[in-house]
Image (cartoon, rainbow, N blue to C red; front, side):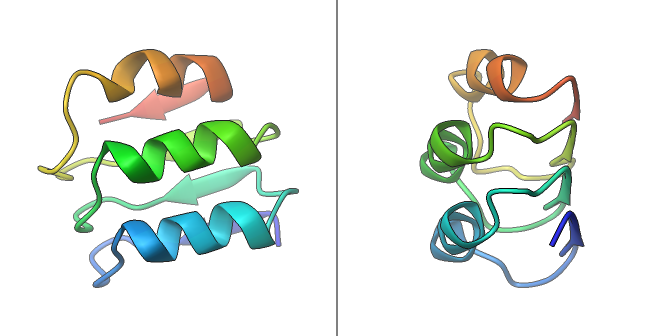
Length: 79
């Protein structure tokens, strides 16, 4: 799996963490308007080293602490 769009689905940290572990070749991920926190971003940063495009618009559970992590593991992110 290289591209996944679960925007506006009821995805939580557990779902994003499962994707991070199960899909190491993931290139594009959209989790916009999902119920995720910085914990999910940390998991992605540890596992999804090929991620090039990441969108998490409207994820109100994220804090500014996630920004440096997103900058490290993806070339393009939007939140």
